[in-house]
Every structure is written in C-alpha cells, then in structure tokens.
Image 1 (spheres, rainbow, N blue to C red):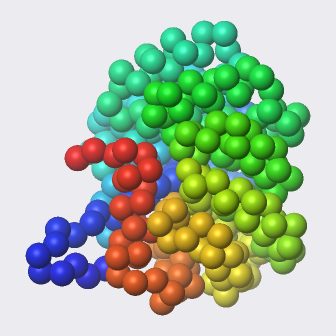
Image 2: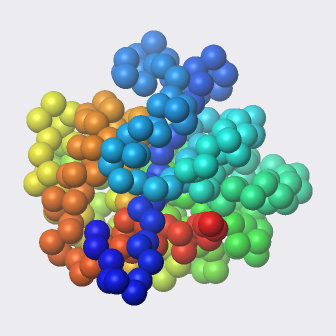
Length: 289
C-alpha cells in the first residue's frame, strides 16, 4: 500500500490469529484426529518472522480455548510481544459473575473483546438465552467487542441477538464459514446480507482457505464469497485476518494474504485498502499505539 507524502502510513493489522501451548491442556478441539500441523506449540516467536516477511505490523490474537485461564495466558503473551495490539478472550456468557470478571479483564490494556465458541456448542440458539443477552448488553455498555464464531446455520439467531443489542460492536469471524469447497452459496449469502444490515456488525476476511478444498484451492474459489461480503458490508466494515496457524491446514501465512490481495485489491481504492488491511481493525477494536 502506498501513502501520500503528507500522510503517515496506516499500519497493516492481522485482525485474527491464535497462539497456543499444547501442554496447557484446555484446547477441547485438539484430539488425536486433529491435523498434524496444529498439534504443536505456536507462540509469538513463531509468528514474528512471518509478519516481518509479509509486511504486517500489528495483530489481534483470538482465544482458542473455552477457559479463563487461556485468556490470561494470551494476555501475558501479549504483554511480552510488542506486535500484539489486542486480545480477544473468553468468558462464560451465562456466568453470574460475568460483569465482575469482565471488569477485571478491562484492567488489562490489551484486552479488547470476547468470543464464545458458538460453533462448538450443542445449542444453536445459545446466543438467544436471556443470560447471554444480558451480558451482551453489559459488553456494549463497556465498549467491549464481540467476535462471532459460527456456521451459516447460526446466522439467523446471531442476527436476532444483535438486533436486541444494537449498540454492541460485533464482528463475524471467517465470513461465518461458508462451505467453499462444496460451492454452497445462496443460503449463506442471504443470512450474511440480513446480518450486514445491522450497522455495528463487521466481518473478518479470514479462515477462507480452510473452508475451501485444502489440496486444490485457488484464489478464484474465494472470490464469490469475498465479493458478497464486500457488497453486503462495504469496505469500511471488513478486516483482514490470517487465522494462523489454523490456515496451515491449507496454506502458508503468505498464501493467505496473497490470495486475499489477488481477489480484493483491484476492487478497492487506496484508502479502502488501507482500511481493510489495518485502519478498520484499529477502529473496531479501539487499538492504541
């Protein structure tokens, strides 16, 4: 991205990646069947050289375990990793002590948001439960962002929940995981359009290659999905995320970024590109520095 002579360059921000340390033992999804690339530690020293090579300045690390302990682990890592600008953690959204726990997290400078793992819960209507709704409202009152991790089948319930808390800043992770490999489109697209009608909802351009055919995907396979969210949300509510290291199931960090640039950049102005690759995430999460 080029900048005018009188304008400070906008930092490039990866708005979605993970760290984990296998021995911590609270990654419910990490089983013997989990793909081999993921069953090892991924820490700041592993990501830093990839960021330098890709020209990425700052990042937002997102929870990968349904535990408060992992959130503290990520916040501690972020304190020692200058490139990490924000941490999206986890709390039980039905916990009677939710408000106090949220306030304690807000005392940590790099804490920016929460993400329940809706995709892994037995109840697809979990987000509509009264206790969850009340705590979404508490997040909105405190200016805490909400990451939505789900599948297309969750979109209707997510839309209903967010309609009830219109002040909440929310972002859909991974385009809500459309089945790109199977070329499923219409039902997902309709659900995304309804959700995008809510002005405080954003979308991460992340996680796409792992929903495509891992062995044979091409950037063109992603284009219809990118085009739809670009039309639905507009460039001001989209943000780049690598989903590293999950992306390694289908491609490298560089391949993720290059694929997005291939299908998206020619459709945007310079200012719009600066937004998608950094400024939108900084504004959405309230990143400082």
